[in-house]
Amino acid sequence: MKIITQRFMSWLMGLTTWMRYLVIALMVHGAILFGLATVKIAVAMPTIVAAFTGDAPPPPPKVIDDIDPFAAIRDFDYSGPMLGGGTPTAAGTTPTEYKASVLTKDAAAADKTVGEVIGVDVGDTAVAIARLQGGPGSIAAPTMGLGEGRFGTSGIFGKGGGGFGQRGGIMRAKKITETGSSMQAEKAVLAALRWLKEHQNPDGSWEKQNAPAITGLATLAFLGHGHTADDPEFGPTIMKAFQYLVSKTPQSNVYSHAIVTYALAEGYGMTQSPALKEPLQRCVDVLVQSQQVKKENPLHVGGWRYSLGSTDADTSVTGWCVQALEAAKLAGASVPEAAFEGASRYLWNMFAGGSFGYSDTTGGFRPSTTAIGVLCQAFLGQSGDPRIKQSLDKLKEEKFEWDKDKGWTVYVWYYLTQAFFQGGGSYWERWNNNFRDALIRKQSQDGHWDYPPQSRETYGLAYSTALCCLMLEVYYRYLPTYQSIEQKQLEKRPGAPAAPKLETKATP
Image 1 (cartoon, rainbow, N blue to C red):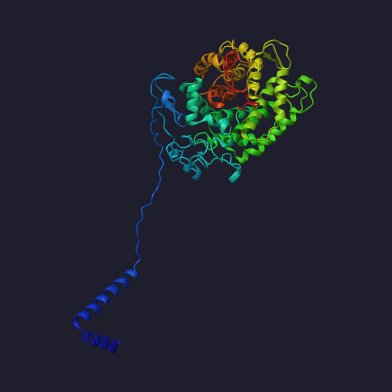
Image 2 (cartoon, one colour; image 1 turned 90 degrees about the horizontal axis):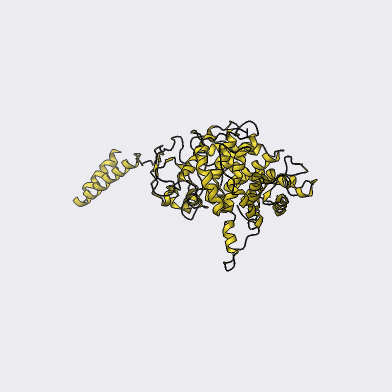
């Protein structure tokens, strides 16, 4: 080693001065590079963390006609007139336990503004925008298995968007304005849904007696306001309700079975969830088979009664079956057209003198079953029949009188509200002015509705609350199946323009 060093130094001294400097510089740089190569360099990269707090969302912008399209996800204290003047002001906060979830790629691509208002329809992309995915917030929401077993897997309106799309966001706000609702009515609906949420049984049901039917009605109330199992506030409630309903199919009592089918149909229509598809179709098939049971009275053919094997029929049970099958058809389930045709024939068999009877045409005018007949025939594409106007003309004398009405009051009001809404024009205007604010005033401070003092109904407060809630959702729950009856009559006058051709089968 010493000899090598001596030789190197001799060689170095033999070089010219500038060459010596060059060799020394190369050696120094080489030493530096070697040192750097042996040292681990730690680079501190900034970590981006998205934090979601429970602070109140920013106040909504001023909206035309003071209808706030985002009322479904906020709690407002509104000042000023109901439908004109005044500006809504935000008062509520978002609960801290509700964390944000990630939207699907398709949802984000559909409309970049979706991040501003998560879960609410924006612009023309209502169908493409997805709901929040996954369990709402920090709550471990129950599921029916994994993957396709969940109860909410697609856009908020699914393939049934045409019939359910007006239930949320801007579209709902538009319907509220057009059809005569109010912000007070929307606040009442939200209060009722929160009461129902707080009074749900651990197994997902409501009440103990007639639980499947009442659970179906309560679920319809949530769906009617545009909420599904992926909803931040009501998602776990709806998830448990669907689990319960699926576990209770089929029902031997046709009342219960039809209402359960109705709820499953709307749930599937709004989500296209595979977890609801097969149970819904099974329920539909049971209803169709029950309708085909041979009837003792030929006038009862096409109708339904209490038992799946009944050989007679009545208008009340048939009304729920028609609504259930219509919703199922709208959602994309397979329903034979013969089922609708048979139901319509049965209802006409119950008609006489402007009234639809219960199980025959005797007994005089019956407001309850007449309202059922009007609603169902409207859904079945019979809105242009003069017998519908005749029935509405008789029904229009009915009044909403909380302290005076007797019998099955809430049940009758539920059907009267829908029948008049389908009638439109002065039929609806008169009833809406009569019932809306009066019903809101009777709501309890905690959000539920008691029964009227002379009601015979004893099914529990979830029943009365759900039906009253559905009444106040009528403005956007289903689209009218036809233009007002009065407008049709005007167009039939000599010289008037021809009315649009009626579709063979209306869509609710």
